[in-house]
Image 1: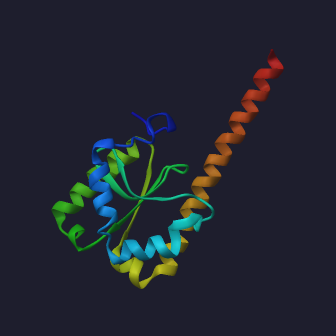
Image 2: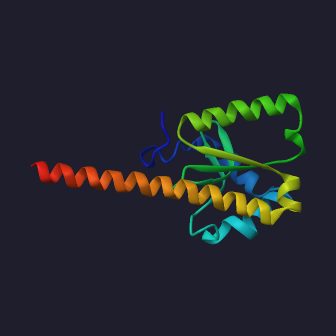
Length: 148
């Protein structure tokens, strides 16, 4: 399965209640990233959603248009076991078409400018790729129309 608008980007309705609960219990780092970078189309005009159910997981932040997931990892992610689980989760999300980037709580709280810059660079890269794909598609449609 690929993440597409037709399947609501692999939205998992059964996790809706858990996601809502998570939104009410966010970490300080998640609140700061949301407030200073991702809410209200602050990140280059793109819409991000908080605590978005996708597959069997809850993504901290997701931009559907770019198929971008941003994870903010707290202290619970520092164990080897959790690292392995995070890696499996990330691979599954990447297999259905998402780009996943991760930041630690510390990075967000102590280096917000650098985190925002890193996200902006990835957003611009993904936007350029999307624009390039759209341009190629339009060119193919024009060529197809000329042939008929």
